[in-house]
Structures are given as C-alpha cells and as structure tokens.
Length: 162
Image 1 (cartoon, rainbow, N blue to C red):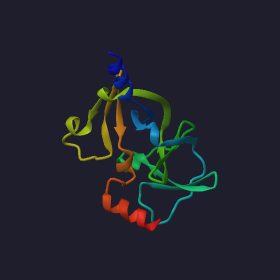
Image 2 (cartoon, one colour):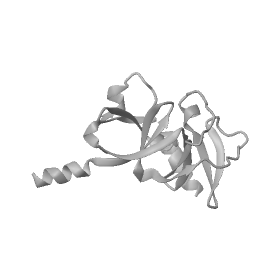
Image 3 (cartoon, rainbow, N blue to C red):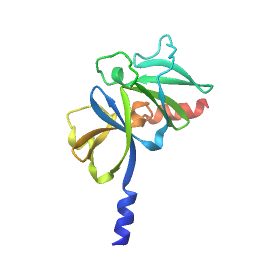
C-alpha cells in the first residue's frame, strides 16, 4: 500500500494555470521561469504574425508569443490582469502573453485525458491533453509544440547554430 502511495505521488505534476479567452490553460511548472506583468514590448519587423515582439528581461532579450494569435482567437487590448509567462525550454527562453495568470495546481496524471483521444478531429498539436480537477476542465498545452521544438530537424539545426 505504501508503494502505491509513492507511485501516486510521483504521477502528480504541477501546472501554472492561466486564462485565455475565458478558458483555463495549463503549462507544466517545470518550464516556467517567472510570471511578469506586461512591460514595453518592442515589435520586430518581419516576425511571424503571432510574435508580439521582444522584451528586455533583466538584460536578456526575450521574444513574446501572442497565444491568442497563435490559436486564432480574437485579439483584445492588454489589461492590468495580462501576464507574460516566461518559459525556458532547451536553452530557449520565450514569453507567452496570457489574459491572466491565476494559480498553480497539482493535477494527477490520471486526471489528464490525452488530446488525441478527446479531440481526434482537431489538428492542433499544441494541445497535450485536457486536465480535469474538481468541476474544472483545463486545456494542457504542449510547450514544445508551441515553441516549434517538436520538429527534430529544427532542433538539430538549433543545436548546430549554438
């Protein structure tokens, strides 16, 4: 019984939960460096349409992705609740713009449905699954897919550039 309890604890992960267009989304806390209030964002010419620009984060230039544009949602003005969640993945630091950041939740792995079984007709690979906690449903995001790191070739190219 004690071994089962330990296995159960190991299958629980923590997620930073944020809002986007009234829905709750989550990213693994392992990728989150910090959550920042919105600061001045410098637009970059000829960037992808979903790139808002770059911010200066304590001397480091960090690109910021507009998740609303990336997911095809309607753009809204930034508010005092808007937050930039700074993610760090494979030596890459990127910010994602959210409507608000609300909490950190521990979600057991068994409460996360695989996206392909739930959303077989949706071709959005940025959704990792749907988390269920109490009476809430949280769209779990695949950080690697959002940052374009699922493509093995581009990952190898990046490592050769550095």
